Image (cartoon, rainbow, N blue to C red; front, side):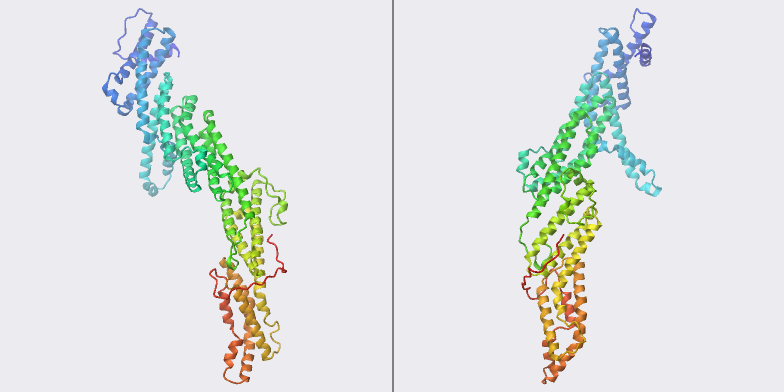
Length: 636
């Protein structure tokens, strides 16, 4: 600072009551000396008034709380005092005035340390990370209310008032802290200022982490932990990460940057010491969990909790890099990245185990009536949920070898051979897993000795696969063409079932229904139909079709082929049977007719309408008729 500037500052501080000591100096020296004296005494007046050692009032009172204008003047006088000391040091390091100024500075710093501590500790409600982190959003919200129509704006007056009050108090407190910090740092007391700040703010961060139920978990403790307990801890951690990144660490970073705005080095040191331990505790948890779940025989559903954790870290990655941008907290970024790597490795391992589990499934469960197999339900539930994580699975599976395209049937999947984009590779993996399932279901269909029920089993299970694909994100991954292909395949299976199960019933009726027949021939045809229908109904009354739409389609299709033919035959031939019975004499004509013509067309319709309900019906048990010589189309 130039002498001229120093004189200007000092002259402002001199009051008419200031007494100048007699000095034998030149006029210019006398002016400078008087100005310096005036600065020191002006500072002394306010510093001594708030001296905690000499005033019981000052000892128990907050200067900023009782008299903020005087508090700000206090800071300005201390700054002037520091500038004066800089001049005196350069001229005479041993002068009495410098010693007096130094003593005053010590008193002032002790006072400011007390004020700094009181403001930090007494205003925790306005300095908690959530309040600080939402200041900018509160400001935005307040300004947005001004754009509302009058009737809407009136309804928000209460909210606006609260926003204004919170923002004003928080802003004032942060301004006071920055003023004190800048004064102490400029006066050479940065260490003392940081010590107070770090002690109080670190306790707040540590308490926040504790309240969020984040605790240090050793590898040994994780290994002994049951999955139920672990899942609860993961859910708790997911909430903790969200709160930590949105409010706890973000709010602390904003506060630290504001209070120590004048020094990048101090901002870094302060934030690092306050937040590092809590952040390391937070980001150390996923890695320990990933290590536990990478072991063999982990249930496949564990992958979703790991995906949740991966998604949470990846989704907050920009915030992590922004909040922990200092070199001194690079260890936090490294640990977060390490957790992502560990989680991705465990997820890939669990997906491999999931595929292996489908291929190795050896359960001999035979679903009654050719219904949906539990394996189909569990696998499609799993894949449908996995599809919801497609955005992160693209990253997780990048670089790992995809399924061999040559193993997929031609035209099974509508991807160009040259399409090697990440999303295409992910779709290929899902298509492959479904193909593995369908091949396994095809093998399990052999447990049914009746070929027609095999086809119904295949139709039911493929219908479930297509339905789940349509109603989930699998449709976006696999594409509409994939869905259509498999829907067509399902209709083919259903058609084969109808042909094998009910074709013989239709065939039992004469193709040429106009040809002349004797009563005995008609009776014989009715008996054949009765036997064929009873046999088919007995076999298939216990069959089920889970999907209501498919169930109705199959029943209606069977009825369309069978009922009209039988009705025509019944209407034209039952009279022949009745006439023959009458010609035989006796009064038993109608009774004889009922033994031959056992079903009316309406009876057939009613019987068919009761088919395929999941509870089954009271028909006879299906018989076994192995037909290994008959071929079936492949699932693929």
